[in-house]
Amino acid sequence: MTTEHIVIAGGGLAGATAGKTLRAEGFEGSVTVLCAEEQPPYLRPPLSKEFLLGKAGEETVSVLPPGWYQENGVELLMGEPASSIDTTRHLLALAGGRVLQYSKLLLATGAQPRRIPLPGSDLDGVMTFRTLADSKRLRGLLDGGGKRVVMVGSGWIGMELAAAARSYGNDVTLLGLEDIPLSAAIGPELGGFFRTLHEANGVQFRLPASAAEITGQDGRVTAVVTNTGESLPADLVVIAVGVVPDTALAEAAGVELRNGILVDASLRTSAPDVFAAGDVANALHPFTGEHHRSEHWHNALHGGKVAAKAMLGQAAVLDMVPYFYTDQFTVSMEYSGFPTLAAGTTPVIRGSLDEGSFIAYWLRDGAVVAGMSVNQRRVQKPIKALISGRIPVDAGQLSDPGVPLEELLPAA
Image 1 (cartoon, rainbow, N blue to C red):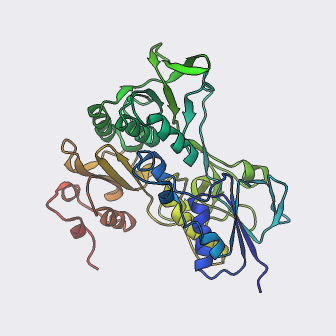
Image 2 (image 1 turned 90 degrees about the vertical axis):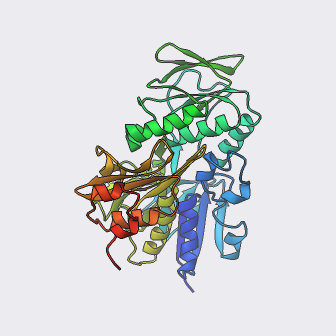
Image 3 (image 1 turned 180 degrees about the vertical axis):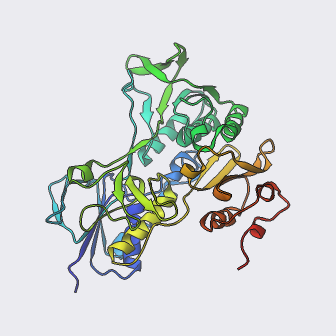
């Protein structure tokens, strides 16, 4: 009989996947998963997409079936976040006072919405967006349409929420610090594609502009005043200006931090027997030789698997090509690659932005480092192969729809 006890602090995709992987790999010791929310681990991408739009029920966002934890001997503690770690004695204290002894510990504490010190942000009708409860609340507020919605933030989440709000028939105005939305992530040309898409569907932009003040009456929001002095009438304000990694637990324990919890390619932290995965982990990637912190579900999914195997002593590393997707109005987009390597380069386009069906490739030193497909199916696998193989390619062939992507790959 084993007395090993693996504790997972964090009830998101990374934590749940780690627990599942431990059992799949034959670990017979105790496993405890701590959820800060009164909710079993769930997926975040649907919260701003199909769940928010009412196209999927709550059961579809669960990482694992409701009975899986008990059936597999995994203790699931909901509403019981960790409060402190003693890395020397291998002890983890919970907010409720209980103390757990661990043999290995996984920190999968995720991230929290970035908050800005904005006058009026405490008014009724002003909210941030991160959790299942947030998505439920926002869906109820948007349903039926007819509201004046001001979205603060022009990143991926802000754009997805704007699309959902407009799809419900609300008036939507979006504020952002960039001249073109998403341009920091994918460049001005492709950011312009998404702006045109939103404007064609009735979303209004104020760019670049920021919220200077939120005003209200009788405790409820009535308008957002921008830094240019414009007053935008508002029944609902959603602040979506990114997230920050939730490192408080690790920091108090003396675990090394750098833009999140610093970990190696096997997700080990600076503390003995302590690992980190998901949004909170800044992991060394073998492909680039640099640390990367990703806030996308694909990273959490694979990070949970790698952390579990590494905790069991296996030679596991987080070496997959990063991936994420977005759905906005009639556009379905998938992106694979390394944004830091793509930064500053001009994408090669295959297809037509005007027709809304294309692939964009970013090259560095003659090889693809990132690829984004819009309304194109089954192309991400060869794109990932081009990236991971560091395969030299000709830009003319990349842009030519008549050249199958598979022909650019070496013969098997």
